[in-house]
Length: 260
Image (cartoon, rainbow, N blue to C red; front, side):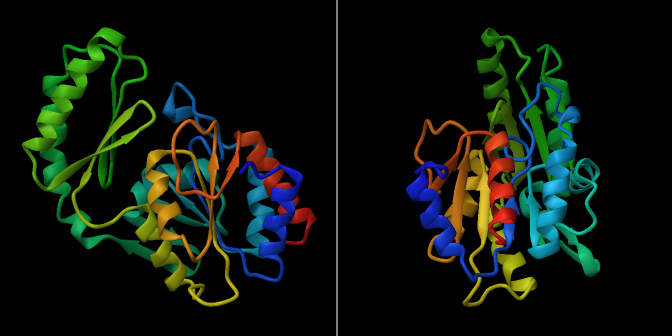
C-alpha cells in the first residue's frame, strides 16, 4: 500500500499515535539516491536536518551494508546509532559498541578471498572492490553486459572455495559476507533490546529499498512496520511503500508535523 494514499496515511498515523517510534533506516536508495560512484553517496542537507530533528524525539539508527566508518562519515550525525556492514558493526551514543564475534573470526577468510578476487577479475574492466571490516563488495555497475556472466561465475567459484563465507546480492553488487546467523533483521532486534525498546508501547519503523532489507522487514513482523522505498517490482515483507528518496523526506516531514 502506498503510504501517501489518504486512507493509508491516516491508518498508519493512527497506528503510531501515542507510541514510541524508533526509526531504523537503510542508507543507499533510502536516505540518498543510488549513484554511479558509491563514494559520492552523501546526504543532502535537508535530509540531514530531518534526521537530526527526528533524533531529538526518537531513537534513530542507520542500518546499512556500508562499512561503519564510511556510514558515519557520510551522515555526520552524533545523535544517531549506526549499524554498518549489515549490522555486524554497531556503534552509537553513550559509548554503545557491538561487533559480531563470529563475523570477526571470518576476517582472515575475507582477506584470502580479496586476494583471489583481485587476481582472477583483473582481466575484466569496470568492476570495483569495496573492502569493509566484515565484507567484500564487488560493484559491477560499469562492467560491460557481455562480461557480467563471467564476473558472476568467478565470484561464485571464489565463495564456494571459502565455506566460512556466503554470497549476498544487492543493486549491481555482489557481497561476500561471513556465513554466520546475522543480518540486518537480527541487528535491529539487538538494538531494540539494547536500547530498552523491546516492550509494549513501542512501534519500530524500518525503511529500506534492497533485498538485504527484507530480513529487517521480516524481523519486525508483529512487532513493527516495514516501509519499502522505490518502485515495487517484486514481493516484499514490508507493509507500506514510498516511491523515492524524496517521498522519504516527505514522510519524515509528516512525522514531525504530526508530532509523532
